Length: 120
Image 1 (cartoon, one colour):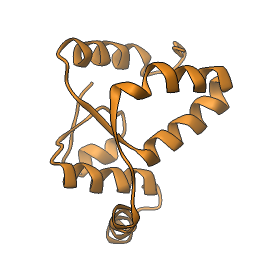
Image 2 (tube, rainbow, N blue to C red):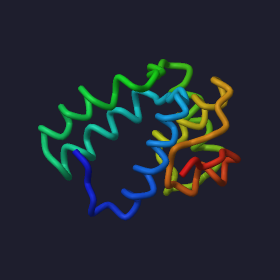
Image 3 (cartoon, rainbow, N blue to C red):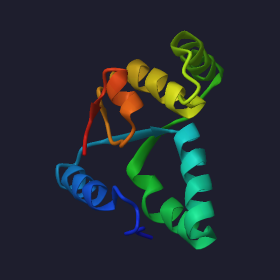
C-alpha cells in the first residue's frame, strides 16, 4: 500500500522501520484512524484501506475517543484560536498528554508547536 509519490514517504518508511526494529509501542486515537481511512480511501482506494486495516492498524494501541477527550480537544481548539488546527490534531494533543506520550510520528508542525517531539 505504499504511496511513493508522497513527499514524506521515504522518511516515514525509515522512521517506521526503526520504530518497528526497536519494538517501540505505537499509539493512535480512533479519530486519527477515521481520518487515515478517509485519506487513504480518497487517494489510494478501498483496497488500500482494507490493507491498512489488516496490516498496519493492528500494530497500534488505539485510544477510543470518548466524550471527555472530544471536549478536551474542543477546548484546545478554542484556546489556540487557530483555524488551521484540526479537531483530530487537538484531540491527539489531549490523548497524548493524558497518556504521557511526548514523541509523535508526524510531519505536522502543530505537534512541534505544542511541545511534542517529531519522530521522523
